[in-house]
Image (cartoon, rainbow over all chains, first blue to last red; front, side):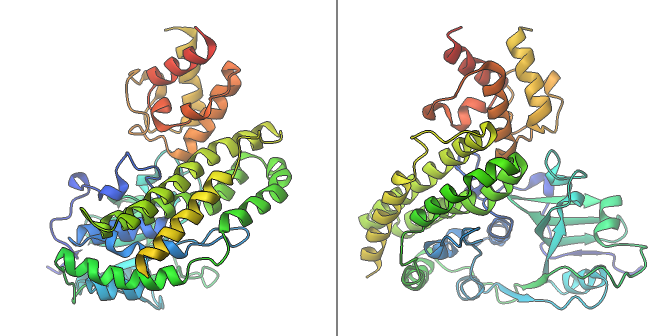
Length: 330
Length: 82
């Protein structure tokens, strides 16, 4: 009988899966963005420390209608862990690519529609079409079942969702463009001792800090919010949620990740400036969490935000944090 | 069931996007475990403020205040003095 099940990591089970601590319930932003979330869990499942690869958050900037949609640097994932992400040319049906590469011990990362992902029950599953990223890890052809990493966990989908995801039994439609996909090779996986990983991460952090925004991004965010508020109020709450995900959530979640990275890097009894910077970035993150709720109120009530809806604390904390961080890596 | 609890359950049904039936959820059950996302919790907060004519002060805009029916009822009670 032909092999019909392809598991990259034998033993991975959705119902037994334990998330990384970056996705624990007590985090301010349990889910950050779909790409960084899925990479965190992939690294965790591989037995390496994702905290090492979060230094890139120091370079997160305000881009007008977005904060940087922050993604782990592929070069760093290769250097730190031997995990190699490369874009894959989707030139034939996705199911054929999945069989080929999972059988060869490679993960397949692909854009997907949350409408088909049962782990989004309560939000998008069978309600809304939303682009997200999954990493395929376990393909069972006989059972029409897929094990996949998504957001903060590892899940399974089957049956009708499986058939829709892979467009099984549907004639190829030239009007449907293939989704972006990446191959993830782990044949050179390396699990470094903690100190060696810290030394590597610290060297890379110098580069990330050199790329930090030249001017405080929170001041620019504040000016743009003031300009956009009336339009946000007119557009309503669903539009606000999309805006908040692109802006406030990316700011708040990246600052919480940066703080976690710095505390991990400093270690016990390490560089106090790293810990001080981390505390300032957590202030930014906490203020962003509060802001997302208060700005929702201002949008829903269509009234001017009250005086406490201030960016001042966030901006000051960002400046202080970056000063401490720059001093720590100089 | 008190009117206040019934109103909270109705708001959770309309805005909480839980994966279980909010009408039958134990009062101390964790709403986040029951599928409430941070996105949905914003809508729940706004609906609660509208329903009970209150505004949660900053120190109450935290996860713990919205984590169960009992916690929400306690917070509303604190804000309305009853």
